[in-house]
Length: 482
Image 1 (cartoon, one colour):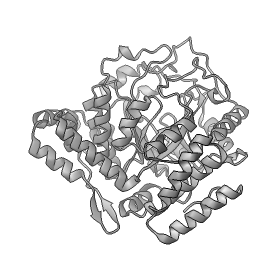
Image 2: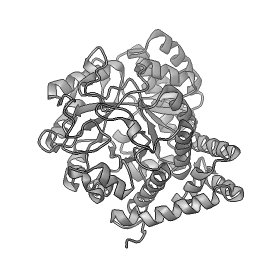
Image 3: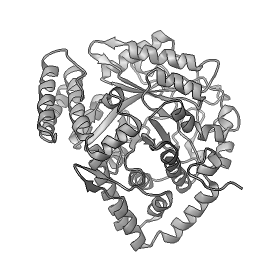
């Protein structure tokens, strides 16, 4: 019988089934305990410290109590606290990225993914390096600076050498004023040696979705292929950090298992990384099961409503206050609007989830990994964010200045990140407006930049940022950063 231990290196101990079930019983017993719930919300709220703020975060049990609560006034208090935390550490900035699908060859048998080995209706495709270059140019012409590369697990077609070659190609493409400045990587669990190779290739965040933390359900959903090994998959983040990757991104695929179970496991995983490595996840993603080729999400009976989904995001923000939270174009504009309020700090825009999709004029569907609900252009998304009071940020400075892992977290907690991220967001937004934006987006954007410059705390930083913004407007000079 495994015993719960957040500091253990064994998946069955740091994601412990008995502890999760005890947590869910505790949460159910206390879901109407108003005094307890209000005290948990108060504990989570940011506290001023010097020029910055600190947050205590929440344990998986505390956070699970909040998730179980269905009292409307208390849920609204959770949302308000989540928004307060998000503004304290991330301000009104929203980081923009796009996925780039390299290959849909895969040897796994995942029941929820159209890439599964037995799917004979999906055409298999793998980008050549010339095709990677063409996709990157298409993404640069949209205005993107940050990508998350995706590939199925196939040692023959998608070996680590192929991934490394693609990363090198992506970074090598300089088209007009465009550059991809950060490549995040979402590929299958691998070895410490391979993670070192990814680190040496200059990746940003290593992302790996757990899919489900319920081991029995995990093994049922992954009946064949190397992904069947629950422990190897669940312990991947530890190997990545041992390989020198400072920033890792967690995520579950909500809808595969009961959401309360998944939520508890997700927070426990974050606690484990903090306990063992001294820093929690750099990002947490919150995807839901979607329809795709040879897959019908209605076959999974753990679907969750938009309201529950929003509450999950708020509770993650309360529990893991310093993490970046990602919601992709899997979700509609309406859902993404709700999620932005309660703590989401990164969104994708103009995404195509098919291999080679960006170079095609019409959105291809035959190789899509999942349905894209938000099909607006990047320009539409950028303008929408600004009209909603958010600064679209294409910034990648922290990664390139070495502000990763615990160094990023220390700046975040001290409040000093505002003197970096806020001006960097405005300067990269200026690049987008000058080089790619429609006239309507430019009009909204330049007004926002003028207003937001006045919110930079330090006068010297504000002055330099203003000078750099004018330089971007008047020349081809790019990539200013603090």
